[in-house]
Amino acid sequence: MSVNKNSYQSKLSKVLAALLSVSLTFILVFSFLYIIKEANHDCTGDGCEICFFINQCENNIKVRSGGISKPCSIIHIILVISSFCFFLSETDILWNTLITQKVRLNN
Image (tube, rainbow, N blue to C red):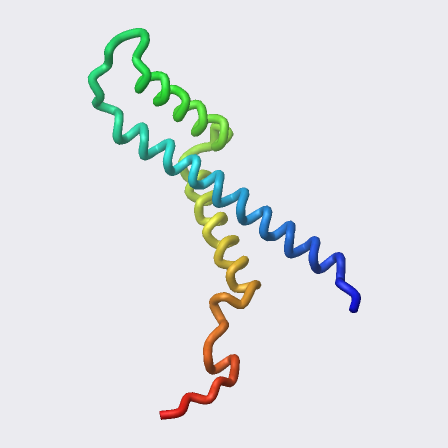
């Protein structure tokens, strides 16, 4: 029984690409959410930890987005979602039904 190595590597690369895109999207979304949540906090001055974390979130967004404009980031989100949907369709998760499995449904 031989295993097709190219097929395994292509599936693995698809899985890794999907995980990478999902993780980057989560980083961006949660950075935005933290900035929104803590925008009106009570700042204590120079040693404010919340300001420090807001600065880190802003740096995450700047580095991850690469300084691209809003339309490009929207296109990036659309591409991530469509690639994730394509990944799901490739693994037959969306198309795996009782009818496609030819299961007989008795009363």
